[in-house]
Length: 90
Image (cartoon, rainbow, N blue to C red; front, side, top):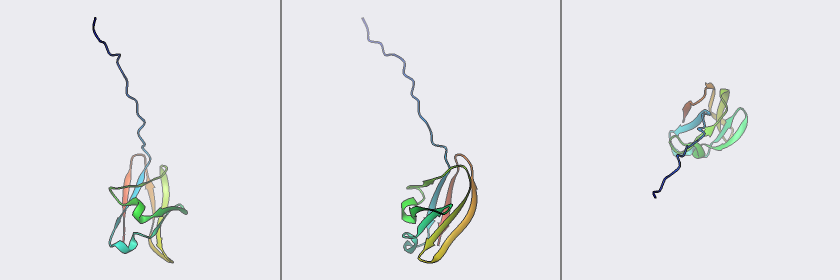
């Protein structure tokens, strides 16, 4: 006799939702809040480019970063499937 191994099929679902991340110019902006379409997503430090990202649905979004009462970044952007977009916050 011999050993046989049944063929296997590996299936995976890849997440093609657009991703948003941030590059920071100085550590003082790490505690700033990230808003996508008016929803508070967390702090900039949670979504540093190359480490983590905000996943959103494909389409047009308003990305806003605030610190206290100041708006550090506000941009309307269209993001399609599979797009990764990094914003610089100063």
